[in-house]
Length: 137
Image 1: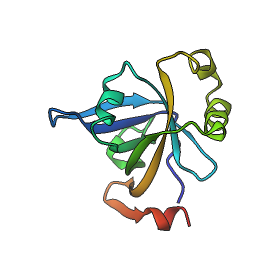
Image 2 (image 1 turned 90 degrees about the vertical axis):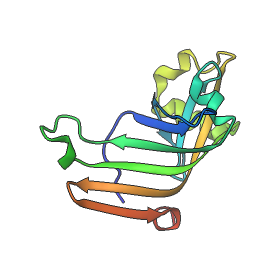
Image 3 (image 1 turned 180 degrees about the vertical axis):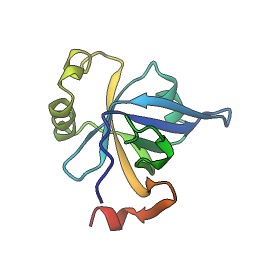
Image 4 (image 1 turned 30 degrees about the horizontal axis):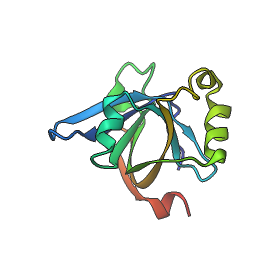
């Protein structure tokens, strides 16, 4: 599967008051194709992830399209967990070198988004659902 070309993603999860919440993120991918995130402990999304690791991550490839509903996007459904794997740190910083400025701040941590399934919208009315084993086998 080819992911839509996007330089950012939108992370969504429910907070402890059950309201859905979304946040702009700047992911990178690890060697297995799983998204990596660098998030601050000061953010609401990290606090909410402490209540539940379940989240979704939207990659929007509709930039520059006059009718965005006809453009590609993929929503990943999965679990977000902190990672201290040096390979994850290296992969993230290789893809996002600007993050080196704040990656070592005490409130920032690396996270890995483990994909369980994906919903690909390849254009208006062209919708495909994939389980992780179909994407990463």
